[in-house]
Image (tube, one colour):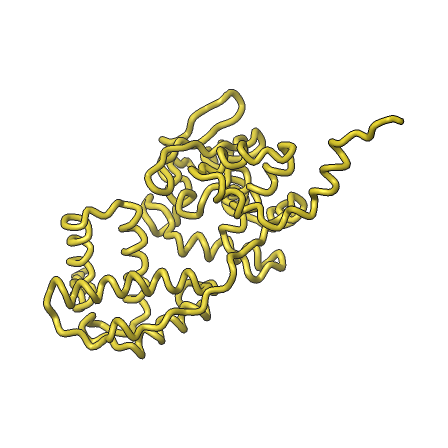
Length: 301
């Protein structure tokens, strides 16, 4: 059978040249490039334009609308996420204009920002997590438990590999390079560690932990992981799920079960600034009165 290789359209060739420039000229990190590539590939898949030079402000607005409704990613995107993706597209168009000296149609200064809501403060209790995983497949269950056990980010979950596993008796941890290229550990409970070994054995996995049947051993895209987890939580009645909710759930759970040890919570979240941890715990001050009554013993007189 004769296979004809599909010819890349203009914007795909432009994007590849832009990525090479980001790596070789601007020295962007791998983490940054993952986001840049994902954002631009998402725009390309939308089919809005096949030439970066011809992208208009109206098409940028159309892209933002598709993100907002979830038609591109399978889940509704909030303002801060949409603005981040559009910022990448602006960088791409600015490169075309300034570095390639191309005449672009889009007026970069006229691109409007999506209104950003207050930071999300949603978290799940242990009972809620248990109800969700009762509806999950083995793979979905392991995804949720790793994130709830360790506070892993969705991007860190995507890159988990068997080579990162470190054994601690009956438990394991993943030795990872996380956000801002910081090395750290994702610790798992004994129950989740056993589930991990069961999963690895059942599917004969020796590379990336979470792969699709069509990816030839490569990990799921972050957007695919979001879609899988979003579908699971939707089946459990949660319609506005965001993977970062599991990281905050981890923070709240550790804080409450460690006798309100914010330093331990910050350490396990791998935060370099404890003020970031305090943001995760915003809204928990309603327990201060109960905590006071528990620790402050009255005088006898």
